[in-house]
View: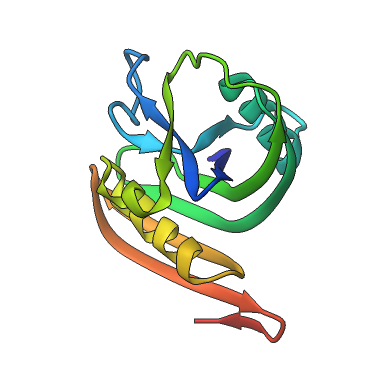
Length: 159
């Protein structure tokens, strides 16, 4: 089982996207994703988020929000639980990333990029739904074969 964070940093109607092109062995090779990564031992989700964003971008997050938890199930990769965040305030300057190229992309254009199919689903949901959600994404190889979502409101969980 793997624990990770992923953050979509927002500014002026754009997301900071990472085009994963630099690592030789990378299951995200040539995909566009937000920034984040794996938990280190004894880290909280927030500690992982802040460390990974700083390492990959050079930015220090000053305002961020947990939007959801994504459960990835795969026949070829280990199960992953990902804490999904958005951030709208930060300090610092963007630095080079050793995993790929960082690019500000208009939010309306993000879905036209080379994304995982499940990422398209949670990006659309984040745009349409302002609350917290849990999403299950089941893959066979690189193909999404099943998905489900539970939205949370003040009343609790709603399918």
